[in-house]
Length: 376
Ligand code: ARG
Image (tube, rainbow, N blue to C red):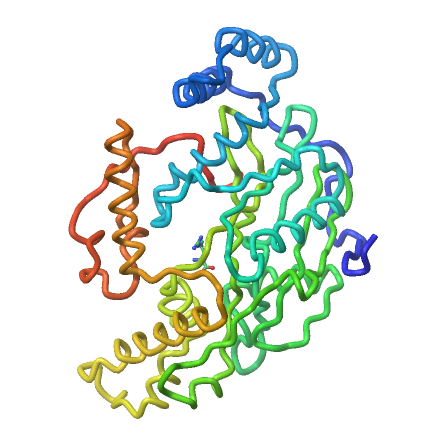
């Protein structure tokens, strides 16, 4: 076993016995099989497949997706993600079928392999890794981190050092024996709870975590702020739901849109809170809101994020381009006779909303499956 994986004694009662998952709803299963065949007419054999699925659900309370169903289901789950502005490329999602992985160590190895494959040398590939589903006999594994790559947040007398969003996760990792260096951008270990057995802490090897130090094209002092961010956002705490089957461990990634980092992660008052610092270095008048120092600082911070990723050769999109692409996606979906559900409050970017076309309309708000859903 690689040395970066370390198994620890459980600090509170882990699942040492099987915790049953839920029984599959046959109607959900049938609806998905029909959708698969409607959109993949060349697959053939729908009637026989429906019969087999009904038989398996009656016997075992579950059924097993074929690889083609799984790939289609995962791609449609992205297509149906109403909060995602980046869905134009839903058909290109790479689906890593790892349903055979039976141990927490195996999950850790797959997380690392996922990051390496998805990162490449900076040309980010949208990817999902599908680990075992919940079945009536046994729950699938779970990753406690909300993303594979997260920066630690340490509570100190002078406030939080690092990402305040991850204070609880950092404390969990510490309780499990992890020792952080106390820095602002320490990558947390991945905490894995297998369906059966003890939790596992896995440190991500350095080459699996590509990071970009931030510089501004016009202000040399910007580099001194010591800001950086990781290249790949890989969400790991959502359940991939396909045809009545729940895959609780199915980490997925796309590439970043600059505003996620520049207008939220580094800017929000309850995250890295950098606007006052950037504004001060820019020499802005912070004594009055009417100088719009926040807005000015936000723009320069976002310029730095986009510039740095570009210079580093790491895929990233900007909110103007991505807004236009999203409307292209919407038009394509309508043309294909489908509704494209979207959540306005997530689609409109947190910077210059009204300057992007996605601001000026409303969207269908229905909830469709397959989808990525909050894990229960
Ligand atoms: N907003 C989250 C973050 O800043 C990532 C969400 C997924 N984003 C994406 N571009 N696929 O880490």
